[in-house]
Image (tube, rainbow, N blue to C red; front, side, top):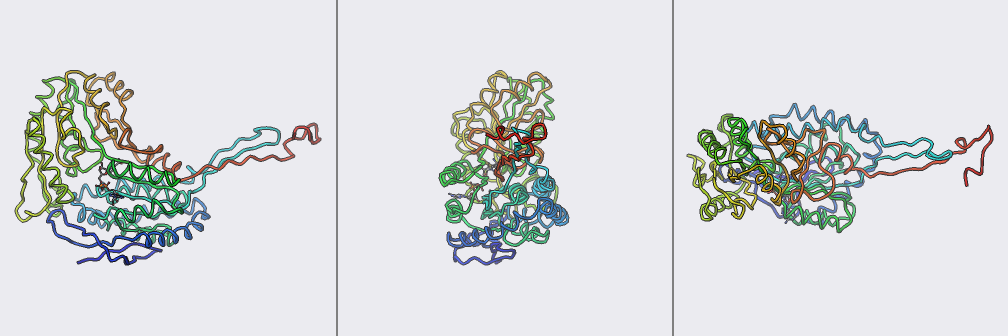
Length: 499
Ligand code: NAD
């Protein structure tokens, strides 16, 4: 069995804890590798080495750092298939989806090639007699990133690109379920010219995370994962005086107005609801048609589309629509939630429980599931399912649909499908959700904007990637200067002006 490692000071490095986690093949249930779980002492040693490396990296001019990003982008492109294969092998998502995972991360690296422009700072000339002011953005030092299983390439890239381009060193703790992609990215960064130690990858679980949160050298923490852990990490990191941005779970609603193009809405719901087995923080999990006729039409259009979906292992070819979920526990939890939906009175239109595939009987598959007549008191509505389960909640008016969306505790993404510009505009302006799509089901902002939810989907002030990331990964220092040449009056120095 493959034994994975950490990545320390520019080389793969075996763990010394003697503790390991199993890395599974979600399509077969087999253990395909084991990954070391670092102790607090190992983490502290790795952070100390990152701190040494950061000094030289911060002193490297921004354009040279940007050139490392350029080379990194080129190498990611050249190694796209290798990276996608690693993503699919451990996560189980299809290869086209895995390439999308890498691509969306690469786009953030592309923006980081222009980091010098983002780091320029501000200047005020003649703020007073002989007085000029300038502000500069300086790196934080050593920062930590703790990332989830569902985007093994994209989210580590969202974190490492801006952090490194700003002159920080980063200790990345990827999800222990999908550790290989982060290790491969670290090797590509070395090949791109990143000095050893500037990116360290430490594998581990809660012990490693807590060590990062309690380590005084770590100045900033970027987290992506489930809401309870996001909340925990935000509190512990900020209590320890660190800057933190922690992105959590989601329950994304898509409103379908009676004037919407219903075929396009149904296509969008199938892609956004079932793509990647629903394991996306921007997946649409709640369809909110306005009016009974809209709801009936939607079900009529969804059912044949769902029946055509092909579920299988990524190795079965590119016509597979989605793969297994990540673990047996996740599969069991999703199946139990489907059962609870039935017990609590929702109408089960398509049932994905008991899905089985010849040769993959031990894989963690759940078939596409559709519920109608879901109400906000049901567990399938209240909980983030993170599986291929779409719930339809019927509403009588646009105001009811908007209220439902706004009352939900999560606020990551939302969408409205309509032909009416006024309704679309009203929705975009009033809804209390961070990312909004108009006739666009998964409104992940492009990499030169920033990504982040509201309410229980995000903790912290700044979003990830784009302009916000350059603020998060730097501190502002403002220098006020006074020089005598600026206070000359009639060719003479006016010393009174200096008082
Ligand atoms: P998770 O919260 O279980 O794990 C995320 C990370 O936290 C992992 O690295 C894990 O090792 C670590 N961790 C887990 N338990 C911990 C604990 N008790 N103490 C300290 N660290 C701990 O999340 P996941 O299952 O890997 O990912 C799925 C979740 O991520 C979903 O809720 C999804 O919505 C969310 N997500 C959010 C976004 C976003 O941008 N808002 C993006 C992707 C995924």
